[in-house]
Length: 108
Image 1 (tube, rainbow, N blue to C red):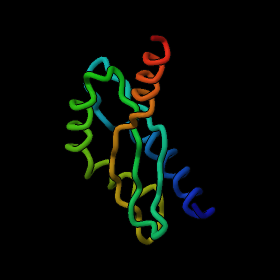
Image 2 (tube, rainbow, N blue to C red):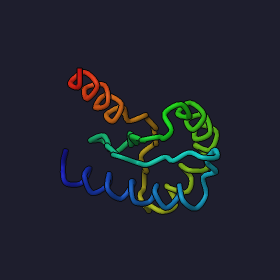
Image 3 (cartoon, rainbow, N blue to C red):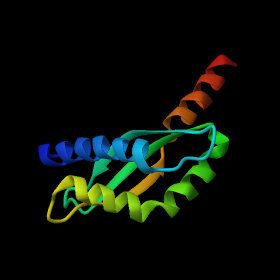
Image 4 (cartoon, helix red, strand yellow):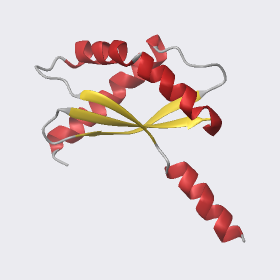
């Protein structure tokens, strides 16, 4: 990752956090956290990894985000002040789930 993509990733994460707090309507009793943002070298895509709790609400939260994607993308584009802003793609961060599986196997 180049310095520019790292800086843009950090900026996208910071701005998306603000947008999530201010304007995204979340389902009740859920928590969504941005764990990592990766911007492609050509700056056309931003892959946003989300940790969603409880795990059984991941599908509901992803559907809600998909329905609000255009609004979130528009708000992000306004805050970045770039000629061409990266398009957002949300992914579920499975690292915590994988670590729980490993912990269970080690406990046996």
